[in-house]
Image (cartoon, rainbow, N blue to C red; front, side, top):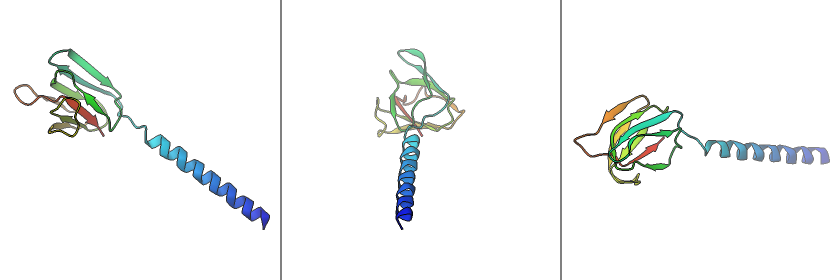
Length: 110
């Protein structure tokens, strides 16, 4: 009886450790690859392997953007505000010119 109780405790501890490790590893996901854009004020800029679900500021707004990551990029109108109006979405490998329209001033991946 004692051996079964001890075995049960070991199994519960191992299961809890597995859940913790698995849960922590999925919370730190990042897109792989570069997100290139041309800033009105700063010229050519790149975000390398940007974290998913983080709102990135695009200083001065992006005239053009190329999503070289493996994750969808959603572009927003307000500086650093990824709850503002969506200006566009770029799937992996896509590029877009925003000249003559609303310039994206923030981007979020995932």
